[in-house]
Length: 264
Image (tube, rainbow, N blue to C red):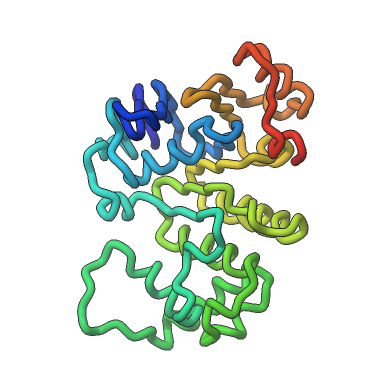
């Protein structure tokens, strides 16, 4: 479902601020894989997701989704393949629009836009049933402005919007990092539920080692713009934080010194 073949990306090339962000990234995801991606600041986690989404062109390498080469496709043309939830709860929704209008936008993604744009009664009934699955009471607030929702409610809604059209690939970019622990746990639970129900191929970037171990069927660790660990199957099921730290040291040749990961 996803193939990253020898991906390189350097920012500010030829200047004093030159930064090699991706350094030959190779990754293959089968349909239904749920991969957690972990690593320190600057390891290349979010840059990899941005490369897949087409936020910037890569310098070298090939990106395929569902067998189709999308390496040179602009970001807006990749939208039909992808669903994405960002770290900032404010990013994935239109704050000034109603809940039902946001869901309608997501449902119409990839379609040509015309004058007929309003939300129908049938659609509202469908959205009401969808929102019930979140267990947050949003089904009774269809006409509420999204800007009035809490961070957790917005992330849950964004998750629903990102998966409404069943994307070929779902990208979760530290989507619980800005939430309090209780709300983050709820959003992660909803993520697991939606991914399993729709059998979605997913990449979830996280700084939390416990979350990386507890969720998904594969764990990828990045360091200095490359993948240094790829753990799956029984090995992942038995993995502990201590094991992960040890494996990082062996693969990178040094100790993990990222406070954000260690404190989590």
